[in-house]
Length: 399
Image (cartoon, rainbow, N blue to C red; front, side, top):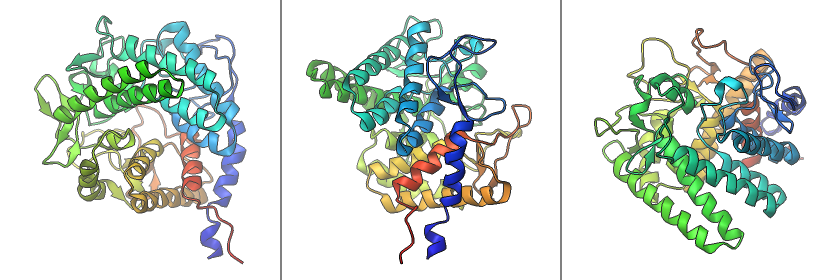
């Protein structure tokens, strides 16, 4: 019993030590990096040194707020606000050549994680106003050359190059079989789930701040998006949410973990959630956690966001989604599988990794023409910390 209760202790000690190692301060524009006013967590000490990534920041903050590093978490949000105010975009990271590419948006989710820790209403108001502008001017701006909103009020990925490859980079899924190398053609279920959460988060913030008219506006906007997503993305025969090809007017038949995002965003109905839990969760769940995609129909060349890889941030999306709909036992089972695999690989290699092979419970499969598999690792450490805390798994052994 003692071993069971303490099996995460060594990993947590390592992560606690590692925060300082991957925390950087880069206040001035220099070389390829844009300056940021506050300290931030980079994914690793290697090729991503001095990088603050957009979507990584949310998953890193999930861990930071639970280990009382709220000031660091708040500064990371303020860095993203600074970038938007300077450039009119939250770029995928603070590099000059990424200024035309964003990433799947999580700014409101970060804001509420920090707000729940420090209750600073004035700060929340500032960040929510920026998120509101980001939603309007980037993701839903029909006048942009790199237009994202393209069909029935729903948005796609589309960076400034307006190429399928560039859009796939903006998704964060670089690269995957999910889009069949035609990312621009799809309304992605994860992106639109995040934008739905923007709208409900913005509404909740305005309610909290006493602006009921603004809150009502964004509630209505969210409901419209929800209606369109259910019409276009819910595939009843598959019991799942799927990307929608607005050119062919057909659902994608390729299933990916993106279909769990409506549960994370509280967009799905209880009936839809139950169908996903019963029929789809077993398809994605393996000994090491949740795989990123279906097992078949993959491209010949290995792509890092495909099966058999599982990524730490996507584990959180699935687990939080299950928790949102009352499936705590399932959520805890998946969390323990992921955590135990992380511990196994930490004991074998002395490191945490960017991604893992959840089928063989090993380090992740990677495509060497992208970049070598990275250790470290910002969001891996953070999600591990958050899950141990969420399920109270680091309890002291009973006497």
